[in-house]
Amino acid sequence: MGPVVIGTLIVIGMGVLFVFYLIGQYNGLVRLKNQAQNAWSQIDVQLKRRHDLIPNIVETVKGYAKHERETLENVIRARNAAVSATGTGVQQQAQAEGMLTQAMGRLFALSEAYPDLKANQNFLGLQEELSSTENKLGFARQAYNDSTMQYNTKTEMFPTNIIAGMFSFVAAALFEVE
Image (tube, rainbow, N blue to C red; front, top):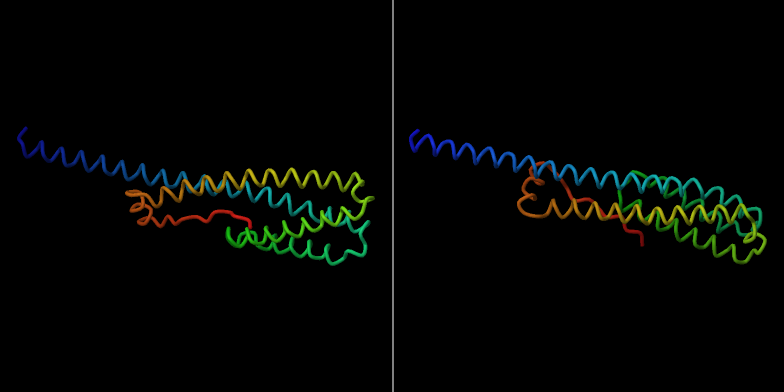
């Protein structure tokens, strides 16, 4: 084999290695994007569970705090806004969930004024279940933000940012509740 043939084989070999490198980087972006989407799905599961618990809590409180209608209506309004925000984007959903968290905080503060409500086993059970859901939601949010950070970092780092740009990989938003 002559030097021209060897040189051609080296160039072809380097080209093949470069193509495999590009494929590896692309697949890495896809994997990280899918991990972030899966982590978001875990948040969504906990948010749905949270949304399902709230009407039961409101109904339990209604029996004890009849003249606290405004607080109860605010909770229902905030819950409906949070349910409506599902699928609108991470930022909008985070804002709606933050408002729901504030409304629920006022509802539980209200329970302090009603000793009978505070002692009600149904209310205590629902409150405990909501607290457990909030903890799971916190862990799911942390996992989502970690996955999203890894994905965003990969899309921004050289040379992967070139591949990300070529195939329209865009940065994902973090889930931050104020």
